[in-house]
Image (cartoon, rainbow, N blue to C red; front, top):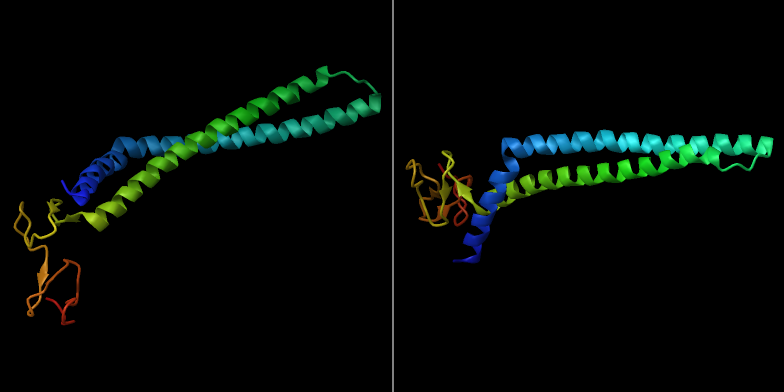
Length: 160
């Protein structure tokens, strides 16, 4: 099996998996959930810094060296950091699905030639094996051109 055929075969599986409804729903959920979680985590971390500042000022004013006042902001800081990190991982996974889907579409367009009916066309085919449509344009000079070509790559004449 040629390398190009192997790439086409592997890409067709990725394209189907990354662009189906289940993947789109999962991707949307991961991106939205990750975004909300990251926002909450960042708010928790910022709030903990504000609480540290308020508690520190009040401790300095009263000269009370008690460390129990720092427990709530410390817990909030740690939880906020964990929530933010987990949310960023969720966003990354969602983006990976998105990039995988878009990447497979790009590879599909650059490697696989498809007929309007959706059938994959082999490199040397002039007609679709499923519907019989012409998938290549042949110039009057005899040169076979790609289906989206407007001018012949050999002589430069306008193609029909």
